[in-house]
Length: 324
Length: 280
Image (cartoon, rainbow over all chains, first blue to last red):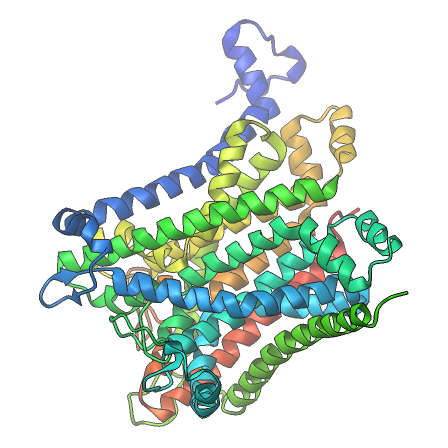
């Protein structure tokens, strides 16, 4: 392509063409174009993803409109599709998981960041981060064979303490929204712990010293000074965990019971958006059924995008504040 | 003088945080320990060399699923690593504009998209037009999942290379591209490798996006155009089956998958801590 064996010194940068070759030879522009194309690919892939989901869910969108989100009949044989039971199951299991995981996770993060000696803290954090790497199908496996039988044997105790609430009434067969929530707790705790710990560690030491110098106890300095300082970042970690649990598929599918009805009790089986896609998509032969599942994916996508967006803003805003 | 109440509150709450840590770590360790024992015991050599046997026949293994997973991961790496790595180079070395901000933000969003949605994306791109499940489509789904993490991790590790190295190289007359290629990337090498390994470990365990892309297969899957078995999908199908024999196999498969993922994770972190963020 280039002129044969012209030494660099002899190249006369006259005219636009040779100047162009000169710049190409140094490689900067090539590198710029190639790397920028790759960066642009991310935008293209994301746009294509939204486009494909939107395009392929056209059929149910036309047929059901917004009522898709508000009706609760799911009958592939009759061609009736309503997303409400799945949205309900997804939101309820994630909410219950958060209620259980947040105090536990933030408590552990406080311990690791404020109390534990650095070596122990680092070792435990390493362990916890490894647990975040465990594939979800393995949590599902453990859910089916350990958690579900475990909950069945715990059932009388749960009933004795909480049985008066409608949340823990009705028959219990093991697979249930409660089991799904507990599996989710185990899966999201590592995220809450490791992000919250980092945010708490980023709180400037002057804040703690100031509180202690004013006579606060260790706990008071943590609760009244450090935590308010780290609040936004901790909220961010909670939102990230929420986004993860909303989209979690395998572990939930394996223990939630897969029943497309809305039940008030956590002891009852339920269904989540991701679970119904996992169970039915490969076998959905007619276009409307498949379209309805793709529309569910679109709903799930929208849900996680919003939650993730909020989380990023929260985490970013503390990181910049904590460093100054 | 501290009141008794405040002292007690301090002691109680601080111990509670310790209890939280114990519970979190303890529960997690218990279940993983259970998996090690339960899965490890039943693991046989046949698992790695035999095809699955039909229901009712004892024995058999998941050799086809192991090979299937390896093929899927290979495609995923071919798609995810170059795009992610070069995109990361852009963000770290040429970025700074509002375009980079948009790319970064979109990367984070893409990273948060549930894996099952990515599976549907790959389905609409490849399975739907071709009208059949294939290894290729499964690999595509995993590859798309790798891109965002690859971008962010390579950007982070390239950024950790001190500016003085770049300046030194350019002061010696190297062009920017040449400095990146011969100075910055080698300096960030151990970090970049760690990033790729952790990324690989993450998608190695992904099940949801494979359910309707690479589907499943009880036999070998030659080439790239046929459905293939993969280890995580096998664990899922075997675990929800009603056969005790298959449950045992699922435990073995879970054990193998977990060992694989943890081994990659630990090795990657060891490389990182040995090489440090910046090699000499």
